Image (cartoon, rainbow, N blue to C red):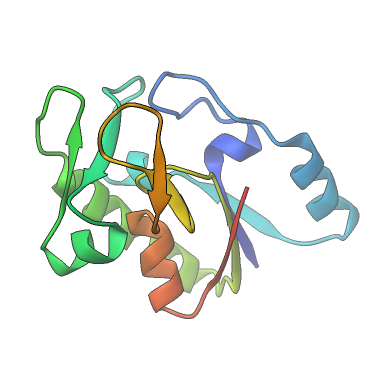
Length: 146
């Protein structure tokens, strides 16, 4: 079983109410007859659509999970609990479906893998993983950034 970010499957669940449909990825999975589930950890955590943009400050997903960094929205309001709750719910679904691989949306504070937004809300990137991507990695699920 493979997991993909719901926005990559065409679900309008991004912060701005849009999707990031990746038709090439969906076609690849379907042509290889691979089973997949699409999920959005932010929605699983209780976030709304649309929502105020959020970024990780003072660390990465690893530090958020350790409690030494947080996720805030552009107004400076703490959204950490929503993201952590959603990442944990997403991991439970991955484990329930015995997922071994995840294709996740790049740069996101949830799904970003290897590169995430800097926390300055200026479009710049830094090395690190989002909360959901980090949690999957820590639990042996291969993560691929899309």
